[in-house]
Image (cartoon, rainbow, N blue to C red):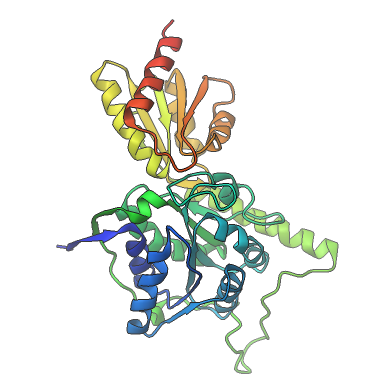
Length: 356
C-alpha cells in the first residue's frame, strides 16, 4: 500500500516533477513559490539533475526553451509578476512547439501587489499567457494531492501535444501541508523518443531546428492552423472537472483551486439549510470543461461563480450558460480568502431570487 507523507504543496509539486522524469529546473526566487526552487536545489543533484537559479525570470524561461528543444523534461516556477516576465519565452516555446511545465503559485496583484493567495491570473493563464495565436494547457489543483498528481501528469500532456503546460496554484495551496501519496518515479531513460529534438542527428536523420520565426506569412498561417487542429484535439480529450452534489442542484456553484475548497463547504452548509446547491470545479482551466458545466447548468436554476479575484472565470461560465440561467459572481481580491459563511450568504440570496 502506498505510503502517505505530509508535505507542503510547493514541495509536493517539485518532488512529483522529479518523479515524472524532470531533470532540469531553471527559476528565480519570488514569494510564495520559493519552496519549489529550494526543494529542487536540494534534491536535483541527488538524482543527477540540474538546478540553476537564473539571473532573471526572462533568462530562466529561455533556459527552459533550450533544454526542451534538446528533448529534456524541464520545469520552471514563479509567482504572478514573474510569470509576466516569462510570457515572451512561453510564446516562443508555443511557437516552436516545445513542451515544458510552468508553475504559477499566484499572489495578489496587479503590480507587485502582495504575497497573499490570489486567483487573479486566470485571464493571463487562459487567454493571454503571451503574444500571438496560441494556447497552453492549464491545470488548477485544489489539494496538495492534486498538486503532486497534476505536476506529474503535466509532463505527459506537454509531451503528447508538444505544448507548454501550466499548473495554476495559489499561495494558500503552495504553503499549506496535507497528506499526499506521491506517484511512482519513472526512469527518464524509458521515456518515448522525441524525433523532433535538437539532440544531435548522428548522421542518421535530418538536422532538426527549434524555431518560432517564419518570415513567410503563408507558412506561418499554415503552422498556426495546424497548431489549432492540435488544440481542438486537446479540447476533445483533456477537459476535466469534478462535479459535487450537482445531480439535483438548483444553485450550481463554480469555483477552482483554493476557492473551490471554500465553495464546497458552502454547498454542504446550504444543503443543511434545505437549499439544493452543488459545485462544478474546473480542473482544467484550458481547455475549459464546457461539457460538464453545461450538463450541470442544464439541470439548475442559477449559477454562482466564486473566485479570489474581481471576476475572471465568470466570463467563461456565462459563455457556457449562454443566457439559459442567471450567472452571478462572488469574489474577494487582493489576497483575501472568502469565508464559507460569505459564500453561503451569497447562495441564500441567489436562491431567494430564483425562488421568487
